[in-house]
Image (tube, rainbow, N blue to C red; front, side, top):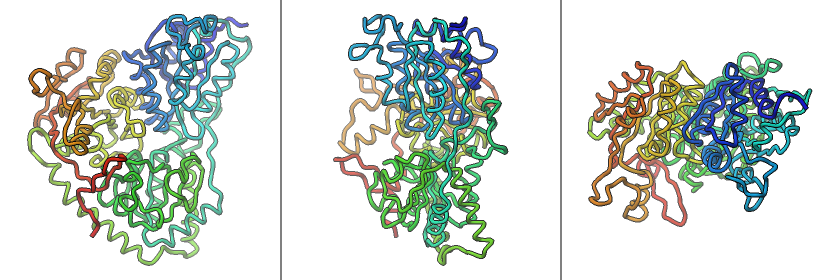
Length: 613
């Protein structure tokens, strides 16, 4: 055995894997790991938070911006249990992080020492984490670490990225590791291409179609490389950032333009879609033109989308999609998603960015040989432009509304005007998230971060700090509901401690309004969804600006559009963590152009542009 203990071996591996931060909340179960990190402070930075879920959300958001992972470090019992919500959010949105969880000493397994989860299986945090992670490892001896660490990183980053758990008993952190063993740091994971015959078949379907569309999902970014390729020195990644999210988005837009095909996105894939042919996101909170184009398409090229219920009107035929009769070309890095919710005429399990590049090259080769698009494509493009103009006429006036409390669309218009084009916006979960899906114009890949699949409240509140760490030279803001902010306000204290400039815009509408509206619509009454004083029934309002100032941040209240614009400018110029409390009208209905089904309840019909003319 060597002079290096298990914790020091882990710390060394993290340094060599170029993990820049470990986000932690201390406990007796991880003291040994904290000691090893203290000795490497000039090579890897440890950030202490005030709630374990915040650590997970920070790591999740960091990966979405940089496409490289962080590690979290939590302790046994409730410490790691509180991380599970963040792990579930990362798993469902394909975001990679390494969750190192301290556990009770292996020599005490099964004796139910302090904080052991052991009623059904000894030290069973991996069992608790199983539904929330891509893979879980438990190292009961130090000689397992050299094998488990490379496997954990490989599982985390290969294929469809996701969180991985490494559970380490207290004694394994402290005991000597095997001598002469230095686990190798793996390079960039392999990226699979489509078979040439499948590329040709996909292009045949698209070019023969009269009404084709391309749908871009969040999964299109899976496995892409970070903008600055911060991989190991022996495998720095391909030149010119080929396969990066930015390169992918540019490739998709160029292919759509070259082929004359309108482009849609899932709500979660909105920041990966761009260009004049982009029509917006699909689903109930999408745009009129996107949903109409989706349901009238005859061929659909789906890139990295899993066709979940909220992006498809719960698969109800003809509301967002009609597959069949539309023919589906489904490209996804995870073969389990192909054909899960719609039958695929052609399924391609491969790296999406690679397939897009193949399609572009095949199209250019055919054009050089004199091939052309299908007759009638001009009529299709004219129709989708007209639908877009109809939608703009309907929604544009709200962006200039001067009513108080503020109209939701006006709040987002003021924020969009203030935030730089490359600024990063995080959305927490709530009514504001629906408006962001419909209204927000992202500035490119990694500039709009959402918790979509798991819809974890708190993601925007704490993830804001991860985005700031990932992009220290860019403006970062989060729109968070009053309900979500109250769940994890300690993120503001962390920002103050570490001097992280960030802006929280608290959408103060007096409750869990997205659920209140469903409660009213389905049952005609409400309970436990609006914030009220029990004795009087009067609305309860928290002073979020005062709360922020109490934690050492700047706090402002913006009741009018002019106030909000000025507050945003002040916050961006200050370089300080800032909370802006914004009263928002909770009674404004959002234009609904599709639907969402919650069986056995009756689903609502679309409210605008329905049925199609």
